Image (cartoon, rainbow, N blue to C red; front, top):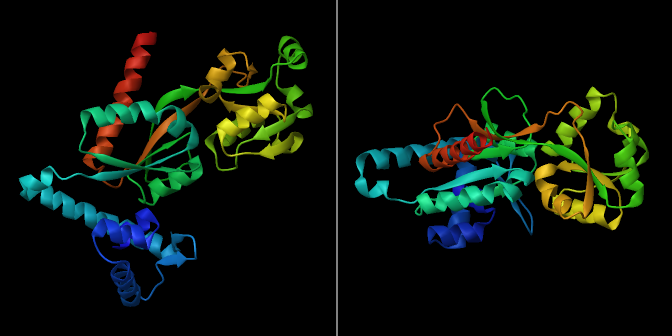
Length: 299
C-alpha cells in the first residue's frame, strides 16, 4: 500500500489499484507510521508527497518488492509471465524528442511490460536514481554521484536561436564569438535543467557569467521557449534537437553555441548498486542498439 500511494501520489488511486477501500489503505499507512514512529507522507488538499523519512523507507520498500518478485520469478513459471511496471525518470529533452521512438520499439518487443514516466529536470532525475526512487533515468548533464553509472548515448549540440529578422541575420554574418549575447534579451531554462547547466559550463570557458547576461525570463518548457523566441520576447540557448524543425523551416535563426565544436551528451543513468529489473535492462539495450546503429550509419 505504501508503494502504491507513493507512486500514484493518491490514496484513492492506490486503493483502486489494490482493490481495497480508501479507508483501508489509509489505515495501513497509519499503522505503518505508528509502528515506525515517523510521518511518511506530507498531505494537503491537493497532493500527497513523500516526507524525508518516507523517501528513505521507499528505497527499502522497493527492494523488498523487487526481491519478492525475483523469488516468484525463480520458483514460479506463472510469475515469470507477470507484468512488471518500471519507473523511468527523464529530463525534458529526452522525454520529448528521444523516448517516444524508443518506447514504441519497447512495446513492440515486450508487449506485456509496462512503464511509468516521471518528468523533471536533470538534477532531480539524477537524485531520484541515486536514491533508488526510480528504476532508470535520462539526463542532459552529469552530476557526480558515487552510485550512479552514466551511459552517453546521443551527442546533442546547444545552439543560440533567435527570431528570423534582418537584425539577427546581420549578427550571424558579422559575429564570430558569443560576446554579442551580453547585449541581448535572453530566455533561459530553469536552474536544474541539463541545458542550462551545460550552457553555464560553456559560457564560463569563454569568460562569460550569467550575471553578465540580460535574462528576461526563465521558462521550463522548450516548446514555450521556442514560441516566445518566435514572438520576439528574446533569444535563447537551446538543444539543437529541440529546435531542429523550426531551424529547418526558417522560423528561427541559429548561431553555434559551442566554440570548440563539442556538444553535450544525453545520458542513460542508473544506480549501479542495484540490479536493474528486466524491463529496465531491455530499455538500456534498446538505447544502446539504436544509437550504435546510428553511429555506424554515419561512419
